[in-house]
Image (tube, one colour):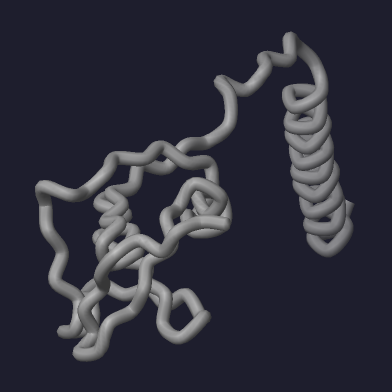
Length: 127
């Protein structure tokens, strides 16, 4: 056997062993994902918010994000616009299943009149 034939034989062996290992690994990965017991999830994901009814503002402490209504559009940010003055004693703790808290909590959310100067005031009577 000459040197070129020997090198071809070595390369062929290396390639076969590598491909065999890759295929075996892929097969094991597929089997690991398909075989075994299926455990149910622990339930829906929940997000804890602080809700400030005076300003109709939500705060998500884990991400340090506020959510507020700005002319019919919900906005979010790490800081509220200066017109908002939240009172800690009025906040409500909510556990919701949405990353958009106003969607899930909307039916229970009180309606507030908007007074001039950016302050929020009395609850509107519901019909």
